[in-house]
Amino acid sequence: MELSDILGVDAIRAQLKVSSKKRLLQDLAEIAESVYGISSQRAYRALMDRESLGPTGVGRGVGIPHARIPGISEVNGVFVRLEKPVDFESVDRQPVDLVFALFAPENAGADHLKALARVSRTLRSESTCAKLRSTNDVSAIFAILTASEADRAA
Image (cartoon, one colour):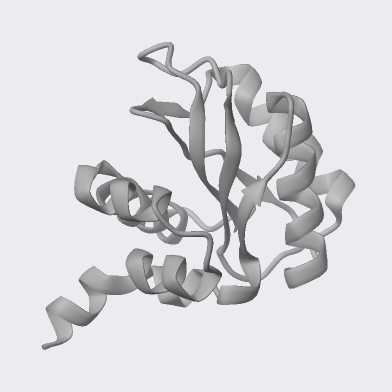
């Protein structure tokens, strides 16, 4: 699964202003509703339920909140770069400023895991994260996130 399969430029925000993890999850749910038609209340509740199992801050300023949502038909992603990092209860206790949220069908199984693995591999790269932090242009952010796909296709 490629990031371009689950993320469009319209689901990317740069310089998002939030003051807390809760507000961040609300904004992610609202973006999912505006771009994909997913109920923001349902998406927010699912993200909060998932976070209650354990935080999805993976370290080095990266968060990958994800949830399964009844009634959607495919995995969808939302990417935000925060204006100021927020506490996300990350494994390294560092605040996050790069967040890639995944919304998957309730029974997505392998597709959800493939998407999660792809996002994790992409955001594990320090150079990719540095590039993402250096621009406010959503088209550039999309190009950075999907650059490894183009490399593999070449």
